[in-house]
Every structure is written in C-alpha cells, then in structure tokens.
Length: 252
Image 1 (spheres, helix red, strand yellow):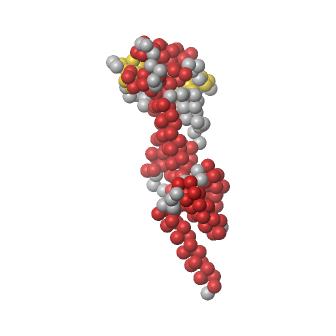
Image 2: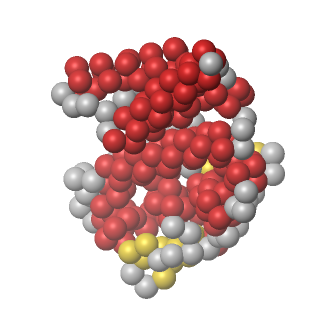
C-alpha cells in the first residue's frame, strides 16, 4: 500500500487507487502521512482538520474520522491497522518510502549529496518525475494551505537545482526551453533568470541573454520598486565582460 499527497490524497494498492470520500478523512490521512511513524497528538490533529469549526466533542469526532479511515484502508485492500492509536494521538505505521512526498524528499537529499553533476541531475529528475499535481489538492484547511506552500517551494527548488546541475555538466542547449518556460512561470525569480541568461549566452544568444536581464529589471522596478539583487547583477556584469572579451579577440 502507498499514499500520494502530491496531488489529490490517494490510497494506492496495486493497480487500484482510492480517494477517501470524506474531506475530514482525507485531512486525517494527509496529517498522519505527512510525518509517518511519528505520533501526532489529538490536539494538533483537531486543529489541523477542523480549523475554527471545532465540533462539540472534538475527540469523539476525531475517533469517528479514524474509524472511517481504517475502513477506507481496508476497502482499498490494505491493512486498516496501519493507523495506530497511541496514548494521546495517532500514528501511521508505514515506511516513509511508501509516501510520495517522502520519496521526493529522499531523492532530493541524495541529489544534494551526489558526487558529480550528472548523477545529481538524474536524481533531481527522478524526484520531479513522480506523479504530481496541486499538492493535497482535495484538502481544505489552513494546515493544508501551509503544506502546499512548503511543497511547491521544494518542487521549485528542485527544478532550479536540476538546471544548475545540467548547466555545470555542459547541457546548456537542452536546458533553454525548460528555463524559458520556468522563467515565464516565475517572472520575478532572479535565480531562474540568471540560469536562463547563462544558458542563452553559452548557446551564442548573447543579445537575448542581456534582454532577459533588462526585462526582469524593469519588472522588479515596476512591481517591487527595487533593483535586481547582487547575484543577478554579477551574472549580468560577467556576461557583459565576456561579450567584451569575445569582441576584442574577434577584432584582433
């Protein structure tokens, strides 16, 4: 049995996928799968599942949710005993590798520790190829909103990191289409623009690389009232100097 949180909350057993019908049950499953094999106290679960709409008897409501989740696990073909009741809380007794979020994070950790750029890039790509949609897409709560923000940030960080790794490995030509798309998705992200400028410059598109800098600078000034940060300014200056050096050699 496996669980997916990168998208709609899903129980996967073999070829069968089950989506718990109750929003509260989905919330409970997401909360305990977020930190498997760790006790999640009743008070935290109640807060994460119900927000301000706390029922009259919250612990009884939580017990009912847990009972329905166990039934959903059993109907999905898995072991309902995976959700364990301990003193003061619940625990999902499941190997974290069976939960997509934790597989994603493990692959990212391995990528960061990889000995060379190609190995790192391949690991990042394995993480990013995991089936994904809007994280916790069918869970509506403040806790889920915060978890979505965290996961989107981690996914974007992995997308930037894989571009860094492939760029260092000399795969700049293959990177340009993906970086263009990423820059359109995140028009104020200076790290992404810097990578795109570098890839374009290495591909011989020096003018377009400098145009990218001018574009993000104009957006930052207009929308945030601020200039690009030092890292992007340094990239811009470095490319200008490289252009000047290449022009000088060409005219000698």
